[in-house]
Image (tube, rainbow, N blue to C red; front, top):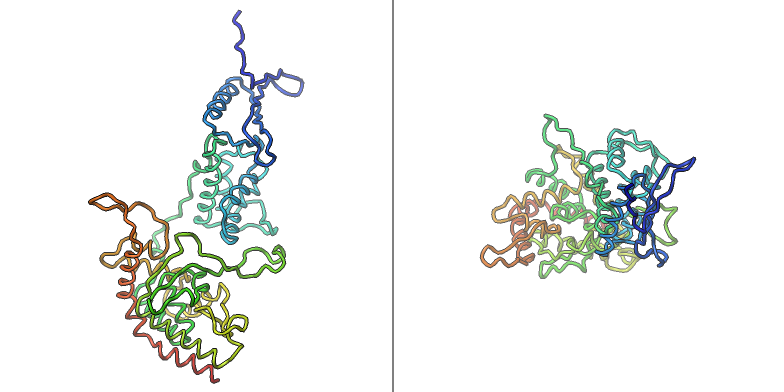
Length: 438
């Protein structure tokens, strides 16, 4: 009679009973528990001896490589999402956006151990969101509407990142989020969707804005200069040197996504923070036509301050500190540039695109100029590098963001300079000045 193979010390065979079949329980040290500081144990039940032995071999290999994280086998999906968000050190707006994207997975499988989360679980959530049949309501208790393809794919990307971090630290064998195929948008024979404006449409928007107010004109020009909505609202005069024609994009104003009832005492509705990422912090040369426009805006703001006295400025401190200001001289709400942009574009016989289309139009029109490549546009817009640019002779990596931005500045002046110069900026200044005496 053949002798039964001896099991490893970490595996215990549990005989079959009246309520449970024969099973093999694996139990072994899994590092240090990050919450308690004590030892953590990995406990998993198998119903086949071969599976338990194979898992023990993999566990031993991980132990020798030091890849065990010290998490228990009951580490849930919700705990994984919360920990991943805490580790990212995001601003409140971006964290809220990521949490909204991951909320359907948490609602559907938040209490499930991460190790039991299969790719079919994730795929079914994505399919139900696409069809509008997802049963779990929103945190506010409302029924979820169908999500667009882009939003679902962004959700799958966040799930991929959460599970990928656990796979990289050795807790998961496979990143199930990476195995879920992205949903493809349905292609029809209709005309392609417009995402940018032509040069003639840019001229129509700039002229329409100049015909209304100087404040609106500077919003439109800054948008076509490549600034984001929050960067336009947060741009201050202390970040601009008109003598040297330089601009430092380092601050933004964004709405507080946290509900008013959940905010701490004194927490404002508008958040002032640094820009979106480190690559978004950029030192830009200002085209000559924009320098002339900013000098006119600065002159009008100083005259408005003299005409209205202490009422002008942020909290009554003269003069105003922001480039785009409200009627009292203080900073505008984060949605103000978007609202004023909508007021202009809706009245024109052109396609209505959001304010961010001005940033896309800037990159597109500049990239069409001779001598301007994707690396030039990325340096101007503050995008993270998508690859390495190396010298064809020495192979040394190039660090020439300033030269790239100077090239884009010259190309921008070639494309958009005549539009800004030919619009009635002095008329906009005169109309703004006439309001002071009214």
